[in-house]
Image (cartoon, rainbow, N blue to C red; front, side, top):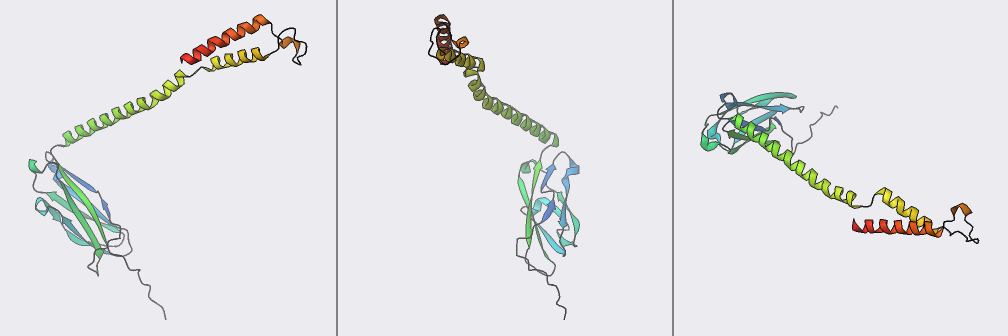
Length: 213
């Protein structure tokens, strides 16, 4: 006997719901934005039924607030704002899309979409531009502040030339003096007393310069 392939049982509320866009913005001065479209996708191998709920249903008209989506298909949900008044500017409303299998009542998944009414698209663009400029300025200030300690550290330390001269002077003072016959160092590396005095003088200047920085 052939056993019929059974679909695994789905857990309530855990099914991902795919909706685009996830935010609706209505502009009071642009009537074309008073109607928005939500697209609900069904990437699964089984049909889904959906229902659209809203926190403020008196402000919106939802065309086809309930329906079904075939497997691997999508459906458009039209939402109209019908209460465009200044008292609603900036208020965030929420839509909730609940999906379930056609043969069941329990909601397998939920997705919230926020909706906002703004006075003007131009004002919104201006605010976004100002926000971008402020963010850019803050990034510039942060970059300068983060670079300044590093620059101070580099500039306050002794240069490579100073360190090299100091090492040369120390090496010169460690070489044997002329007339020291017991040394194993070749004669051309033997320095006179005056040469060692010059090396000691230069080493003293280098030490003072390092201490000042």
